[in-house]
Amino acid sequence: MSGVLRQVSKAVFAVGDRLLPDLPGPRILIYHQVGGGSDLEMEVAPDAFRSHVEWLADNADVVPLERAEGTGSVVLTFDDGYRSLYEEAFPLLQKRRMPFTLFLTTAPVETGEPLREHPGAEPLTWDMVKEMLDSGLMTIGAHTHTHPDFRHLTPAEVEAELDRSDALIEERLGTRPRYFAYTWGYWSPSADPAVRRRYDRAFLGGPPPFPRLADPHLAYRVPVQLSDGTRWFHSRIRGGLRWEEAVRRRLRGYRGP
Image (cartoon, rainbow, N blue to C red; front, side, top):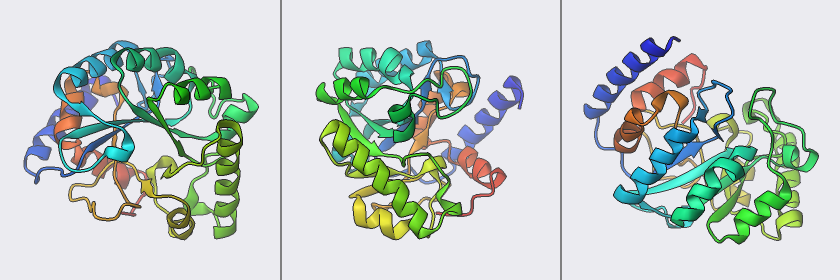
């Protein structure tokens, strides 16, 4: 999709959000890379991220994930474990004393091999993760070991992924994760029992137009995208750009909660 078409579509989706009931609950934002030059939508530019942090510092109550209750607060979460979290985002968050959660995919950190082949995909090291955890700002969450799509795994394969991920986090960091984020944001019936048994809360991807928020193991987050820049970031905070997320779900063939 061209840049102009994407911006026009966001304008339409933002208007559509205003026709929906207010999105209840806290805004739990999803970030991946900060900078890196991949041109993927999961990236945000460093200048844009800086403006997000500055706006949130002045206009929002940014809280740790464990305090994410009710409407009005904002939670920052980062998925996978890209090195740009440590190099680009963490200094800004540390300066503002702004809490955040890392949903860590453990294989890249353990091996040093990037999760994907694109610019900016270098993983964190365990030392970097430990430093952020020791700052008191970061909460660690689980995000599998190798980042598979759980919809295509058997229950036994799911258990093996979670076993390895949890064990490494506990071994390397001395803590067991209480929270889990489904890879790709996609819920899986084969994974649901194991996830509920292991974690206090579990998180999906972006919310549909009329999300269900009562189940703590089917909680929605709001993805922040490269094309959001600063302008559409405010729409993410207000309404989540839920129609955009609904279209993305359909295009990707996801029919889950």
